[in-house]
Length: 531
Image 1: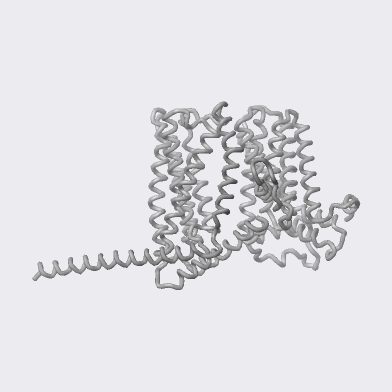
Image 2: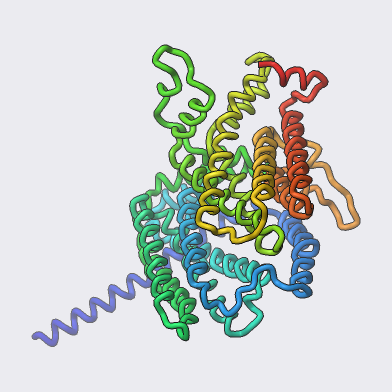
């Protein structure tokens, strides 16, 4: 009797397994049919659109990537990694940065974001979220991992001599492969898990990185090379554990929140393709909360310019915290790069990276930039006495950026991080010039209005139409101004002349920004003197 019952149970189990396999196959076929139907809609991308995209990629490769590869193959590397004996802390820092950045990106635009119409169709069926979102997540995570690995390898080849020897190349590839495995699953984790779980993962990642660094430092000198292999193994194990938990969370994903994210992403994509990028980014700007009454004194008058800017910045605490971190890190990197400008190579990379961090932080430090743009473009409504408007709007970002850069640079100087023999006066001059350049580029970017129609006109060259490159340059004009300005300053041997050039570039950026708002006429200087 027992044997008969056991055999019957095994038969039922096999039947249930066949039924589950059949349902999985049926669900997969239904999802595939819906996707194929959606792919044949009337507004899908055309062959001409794909050809134009490939054309732009080919232009980028011919005019940018190929010359860089040729220059790298005929010249020494900017960064010499040596035998990678003491590179474990750097590898851990890169892995932690990639994980945290991927989590943050997932909170805004994760791998499960799909077109709103297609998501609505799937949500209206009897399929569970794991049926139609699981395959999307797996495919996009595979794409993201491949792109991350290729980009990391290309950056390592162009900037370092990592692939100069077989031993160092294998250890470096182990770390890069681990980062390329962790970053995609952290991207998915950031979208499907709650804020508390993301904080737990971020804290655990930092703790594990510190532990791996401590273990590598405590290893004997002969075994120090094992540090990078340990980093790669830990990253692979972390990717497996986190990825398994993240994919299990897809079945419990908040579909209402995913629908809102997909709708916002679709609108942002439309803005980015048909208009200006800052309109798309405005959709992800956090809403100010609280502290409304703090803008007014007890006697009913408005507070001072700096107090108003500080209060408005504190109304978006997450954005303000990111700005503070970027300004401190940017100030330290800027001081390090400027102090070592005579050595070239790595110092110029630090200089450029620090300036970019300060540029990003200057925009996140407050909402006064948007208020200034609105008041300048609506001058008939607010009146033409806008000298006071400039002072009121620019007081807080200028002071906040200056203080943040000084604190970051001072911290780097106290810890004796920039170990170079550059005179302090020259370092201060170049840092000040870089800050002025960054503020001018930020003013240029924030005064941007709608996309000029003339940018869409064709630019006929022997290589074809280059109007797309003009649009890209216009979208990222502030960042382009920062990079070009830092390159020009680095090329000038005299610190005083370099600072003067930075001030001149910043003045050109401010003038161009004022022209965008419609205030560039003959009596501009007289209007600027009004208070």
